[in-house]
Length: 136
Length: 129
Image (cartoon, rainbow over all chains, first blue to last red; front, side, top):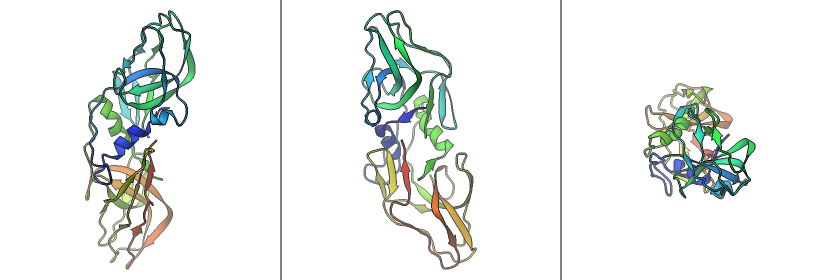
């Protein structure tokens, strides 16, 4: 299940009107999914992760969200990444949810149930409800 | 340690789908029962002179949590007791509003005539991550 980065949690907290740095609304944002090859405990919470670098790779916009219901959203359409044309094999261990197609702020990290190896010819696809993003 | 209600969690997630979170004012409430904190099914105390209190001092952690940073004093009970307070709730309004957090008290507190409930520094704490 997903967990939030410190930066995103702090941003949500500071929507409260009081306290140092408080009183800051949160704007709508577009989630972009990234394939990560490393997200080490403690480091990912401060936004430090390693994104895959296979040839032709790009983040994919997470569109078609179901919910949220009870603090969870799911993808209701398959999410597909560009087919690997080189640079493999690379092992994907986590998904990262960023605010932009490049750079941006990392807001959630989702560990994969089973790591996936991406090599030439492989098209990483996540089927409906494969991506489960929770907020606690 | 406090937990978010489902409604608040969903509000945060909806920012991915066009929603926004405006600035809100955290009002603390004394709760006498919590049927389902996830679904916001709680009972608020009804002692005479009771009102929710605005949390004006908040300490934001660097690691995604927050705490109240000042004593929170509720009106002195002038009747309607004894009532046992088991949890604190954080609402977005004085009289109504959304319930966003529920905090279990380490020890339930009995409130009767003459009692002034005080929630001490840092007794309200949330770890968001």
